[in-house]
Image (cartoon, rainbow, N blue to C red; front, top):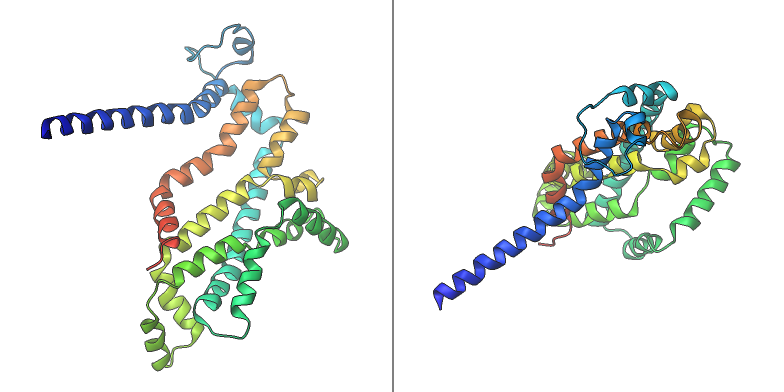
Length: 282
């Protein structure tokens, strides 16, 4: 029986490993194809009646075109400004809010928190329409302020941080209050360092969200001076090297995607650990 059980376990492991390898190839293939196409010349790409899965004459001319056809470097700078400012403002709002819901006692706290959670049920389209009307009435279109403000607060990140803050024993908070520590000092000196994995995770997820933002920047800006990289793809396609130059388009996509890929690979363990810790009670 033991021998048969070991055989079954080995077969199961092989089957699971095979499935995971297959799924990994399925997920990775689009990125490989994007990278491969970006190093093919326009002429060689158009002469391929049957797509080739490799090339013997790679070229980096497409990457040069990606930066020369449109101000891609300017789009990068705009995106960095938008991402850093939005993420910083989100942390300034989310961390104290999560602390208030997790540790402070005030009248109507539970009702207010439930109301916050209810906001997550509102369709994104309705929020976009409301934000667009508000920003337009305030004459903030084509400004970084108009880009940043509607994306600064996040109910989901407040909830994630609150759940993590509540895992810290109450005794630490009570001991700090006995020593005369203010709530703000306790938050910054004790709670945030203890919950650093979740704070880092929230920061990284917000950076990814901002970098990939498309609908709102496209809606609120029609001035090229405020385009982000996500809007730059459409600009490249329409006014850069055209819809037919697929290799150059893929080169631009590789350049835009690379920072996020590197960010995720570097911090993937912290992201997974932070999400797991934030969703576990006790």
